[in-house]
Image 1: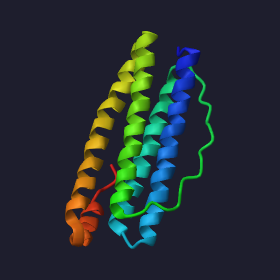
Image 2: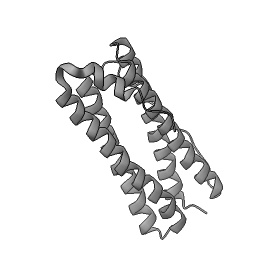
Image 3: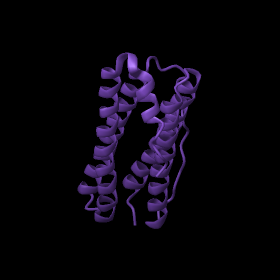
Image 4: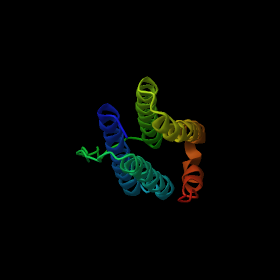
Length: 161
């Protein structure tokens, strides 16, 4: 059984994951308008992945006898700047999500909630991968300069997983 504080925190994380999905979908739409189909495709896959993360926590809360309480999702921005700025925003957002996951883990440790600690281990590993992947993209975009079309085509090869 989840404590009230853990249930509240996990519901907050569900909201963050769904909001991430919505943000990345807005970024994909922006990239579509800028004729960046590869970046748009990458961001759509990312949006689906974030939705899946939210559902993973949703199912965990239910499995532990808790109550899922969905929270409002703010409208994301519609403009994101240059290609590099788009992915810098993705990286900053992933770092914010990492901090939120770390806070959840600290709460699980404090409450001796071993099941939640184990579930969150998956998210901690996932965030390391997310930050590395996006950081690599940012650096690639910075180096690409005038060869941005090649990078966009490479981003478009990411498959949903």
